[in-house]
Image (cartoon, rainbow, N blue to C red):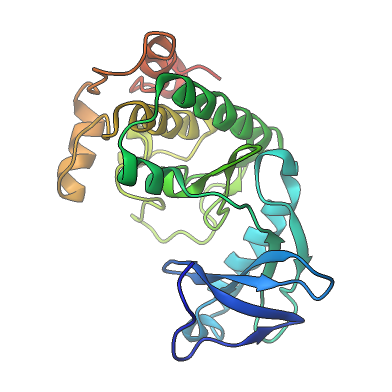
Length: 256
């Protein structure tokens, strides 16, 4: 957690803010105190976006999508404040670092921990897809390693399986560079199989400490994802077949 900065509110709704848990292009997540005791996470859009109807609609969509997924694999929704002048989402506080932080600090996970992450995140993706959603932003920063197992968070750019372009401008690929599947990079739709590809990248990253398509500028990494084979040296034998299958270029060839 980082301290509040100049311009941060002190209270949102009925929640006293204690510090920043994270910040992205769309909003900020704060650690807050619940009035009945305990800690929660409060997400709200950046102040500059509060009068943008598209971003407010996207934020409301994130809240609705978060409520559709069974909470065993994500942070449970505590309160929906999307009808307020400053909209917010209050969710369960998941104590535990992001997978990205763990690997950055200590290197690759041990094989048993990598296997646990692979199973836990796969279970989360089953729940997401059973809710008729595609996450579209599965990456190590969005997987929290709690004492009760991995939790997948941030449904900010999730969408219904049967929609084709809500909140997306023509030619724009929604998602984080390096975690976007080949079919999406070449203009295709986001499918549940696109999340499976991101799962393969994430598990390889957890097990080896590096991205299976290497590092570099966004366009270089995207080219490798579309054209080259992944580098899977170091992925433990029990995980290797599933990771290889998940990283198939053809989404139809990936496991469900």
